[in-house]
Each structure stands twice: as structure tokens, then as C-alpha cells.
Figure 1 (cartoon, rainbow, N blue to C red):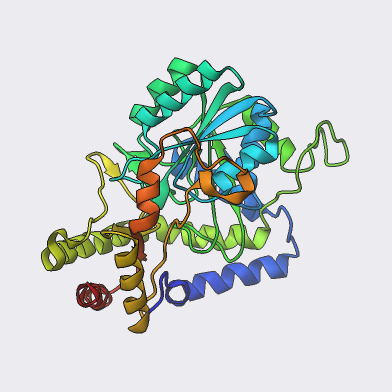
Figure 2 (cartoon, helix red, strand yellow):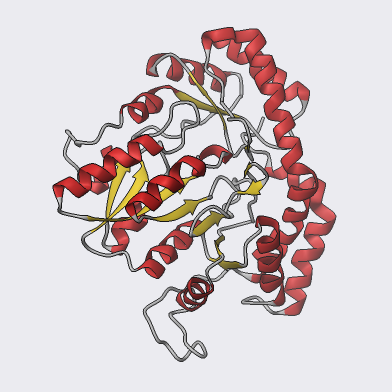
Length: 378
């Protein structure tokens, strides 16, 4: 069994995928070919924003946002403590200071209440200037922007939506990657919409920001790539990845998003019936739609989680722990053991979460196999 079965997806899309890749090879337009611009237009329309600018990867997309906003020394950027490293890494890389904020235990996403407490604390200390918040759409579920926006507006924070895992998710019919002043996503192969390598995109309705993003991704170009008006990056999406993503985007919009939600519903129904309260299942708030980058359960404690994971592995069932360590405990940030901000929910989640195999092509038999093995392991 595969954790996310990309081979099965390829076999389903093989005819269209092979034709797309061969067309790019035959065209010899390997960098910035017409497929890139076509994809950007399709992504902008799908998400519902004016501008989509593709780039080399999801981390570059976040870095570009930091550069557009001029994040630098003395700036505080608030980041969920329970997320992948890059969400905070890009703040430090820009010269700012990431301030880690606790998350909600049901949704895994940044807590608006914890965000406000952290902003107040930073302002009272007076050493940093609150500038922005990185709201991560974790495991496919958009962050609670209805609660976050009022806090951001109250304290003058820019909102960066990190939709690396959230592409396709919705809040009341509005798509993920449309909620930030700038929003980003990743096309890493295992993401809800993934390519066959690295890739990313930046989304915005702001014309001025879009022009800066276009410049930054190509060495800070001005009128052309040899007219460099600012320091930028070399961060382009390869043409072949754009062609692959066009095929995948159609499948994602036509049926994959629906199918992965059906898989999630079946998982939840079977696990609730067979395991009762032995595990905590994912929670999708009313009005929200997840794109299910991960199906993540919570177990009693770390010992139980690790034991269950080992027993699943013995039966050939892959699982993953996202994430084993809170951001504020990552050595790279060099923070004191007594961090000073309450991130107790994150501490607990790092000890208890376990992500199960999840993708749109899972069969009922696959789901039952995982559920039976999980029940036996417990």
C-alpha cells in the first residue's frame, strides 16, 4: 500500500500526461514556454484571484512574499508552532523574527486567540514590530480566516496564506489561496495538486504586488531579464512541470477533490464505528471543505502513537508523523527552553498525531484494510 499513490494516479492519467510531456520536449521551450502562462491563467481562475505567478517551489513562494513586503530585522512575523519548517524559515531568511503561535487541537490550524495574545505580548515587550502573520492551511483544511482577519486588521498585520497543503480547500465556497493579502502554494509531488518535481505559485489581487513578484522571481528584472532593478531570485516553474500540472489540475477539479472527500468520509465513518473514542478523528468545521493533504488522527500519547505506527508498518501499511517537534523547539531557531509563549496544544499534538494513507484513488478495500489494522494495533 502507498501512503499517497502517485503511480496509480499516473496510470489513470497516462495518455494525457505522456502527450503533455512529449509536446514540451518536442517544442524545445523548456523555460517559460506557453504552458506556464496558460497554467497561471487556469490557476488564477480556479482560485478566484486576479494574479497567479508560478515559481520554483513553495518555499520560494513564501520567500517572495517576504521580499514583496520588505520583512527585515526588527519585524515580528507570527507563525503557527505546528507546521512544516519552511513557514518559519523564510521569516528568518528575510531577517525578521518568527514568533510561534499555538494552534487549535481540533483543526491543527493557527488559533486566532493565541495569535492576539502573542501580538499583545510582542507589543508590550517593545523589541519587535508586529508586521505579518503566516496562516497555514494544514493537512488540506483552510485556516479560520473569519477569525484571523479581525485580529490582523486590529493590529495592522499583513496576512500571508501558506496554502502549500490547502489547495482546493474552501470556506463557504471561497477557495484556498484566495484568503491572504498574498497567498502561496506548493506543487511538491505529494501535495493535493503536485507536479513531477518541485514547483510553487503565488496568488494575489494586488496589482502592485503582482508586478513585484514577477520581477523578483527572475533576478529582480526590470524591462527585461538583463535590466535588474532589485535583488531577486532565480525561481521559475519549468515548462514541463506546467504541462504536467495542466493535466493534473483538470483531473483535480473534475473528480479528484470530490473523490478524496469521499475517501475521508468513509474513513471517518468506519473508524468512528470500529474504534469509538479510542482515537480522535479529524474535524472539519461547518462551511469548510478540506482537500485532505493528510488524514490525521490523534492517539492517547506518544507511546501509544509510536506503538500503533510500528504495528501498522509490520502489516505493510505506511503512516507518517506530521510533525514530531514544535517549531519553537527546532534547533535552527535557537530559542530558550522556556520559550515564553504558550504552545501547549502543539506540544500535545506532536506526541499524538498520526497520518494514515490518503489519496483520491483509495478503494473501499484499502480503507477497510487500514481501519482493521488500526483496530488490531489498538
